[in-house]
Image 1 (tube, rainbow, N blue to C red):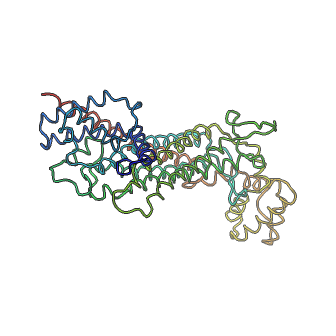
Image 2: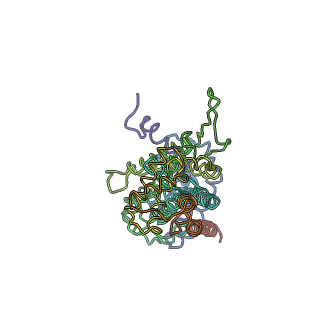
Image 3: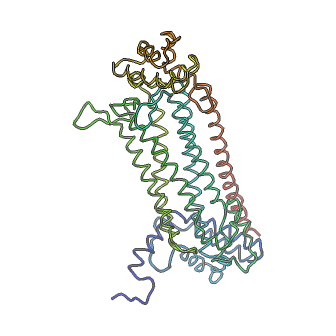
Length: 494
């Protein structure tokens, strides 16, 4: 019979405590050691602990780290969690002094510091993947700056553009998402240590020094907020969600463009699987994996945000332990999307013959004909639009290319204006060519080569700027690691 008066209840142990213990071993043991060392340095520097005591505790911490095989460590229920297991190890070596390390701190401020440290590592790697994709897309856009495509609106052929111009739109969105992610990462740079349980401590702690030793930019100001305001979670996962929500739209276009009926995008054989029964089929299934992994990532981010909904504004398990660990799956699935897309999209090419056929069949350059009439024939745009509309209907009915429809155009022009056009057949063919359409749209953000080249240069600058911010953060953490290790080593030297 189970004794319900003794902690922990076996079912609670197996369903909650043991999985949490394993999670801490996997994700937070190293971070906890870093916090222990930094806290001990701070306690000595502020005079809260004496030199001999800190030296003994430092030696014990070093011995625990060196002698512990985390992989072989299992949860027995003897200690509530990994934190208390470490403290028990200290007590085994030091007696009552082993409990001194916990002076002026709580598992509350330790937990959120651990969570931020784990998230900043994952977020930094994700940012690297985002910027790698941005660079790959920019390189591809530059290479495809004059590659014609059919741009679609409402699922229908609309106007000619270039593959580079299309990709530039995706790059611009991705970089805005990267800026949002960088802003969310800045909230990870504020250290909760020193908040203790809720209200800081009666001891003369140095919160700024703790932040410095752990590689944070500074201390998170309000101590209650350190343990209650989980906006670093909701903000970060919201920013991550947008990356993959927006990439999912791009990926959906890739699926549409590669369909047999559209045939605008060619996916190379290395990224195509053949049907097991239909030998004629080329299935670009990486696109499907990109799509569902993007959706899964969005869902995982939503899970993290929604778990915080209607929770109390205080310390709570809803924002800790298992919830934090569940969110890490978003970095995994999202990272797979970024790596695969950075490889697949640059390997794809545009089917120029299909683009030309669709352009001719759908009269997608007709807008430029209307613009030309306004400029060269001195008619209003509405009248020019009507002439262009009649011309398009006539050539589509005859199933012939727009460029061959000069006679239909001349008739439509005379019907609308009451006079003959001054455009020659060569003028008409020039005005309705995709190349002319693109070249004449040399405005800021347009598809013409000069405008696109200028845009791509700005995108590279933005990518470099965000990359510099990421490198500065990583450098700060690396410098802090070295400083902390040196300060900790000094504790044992006489």
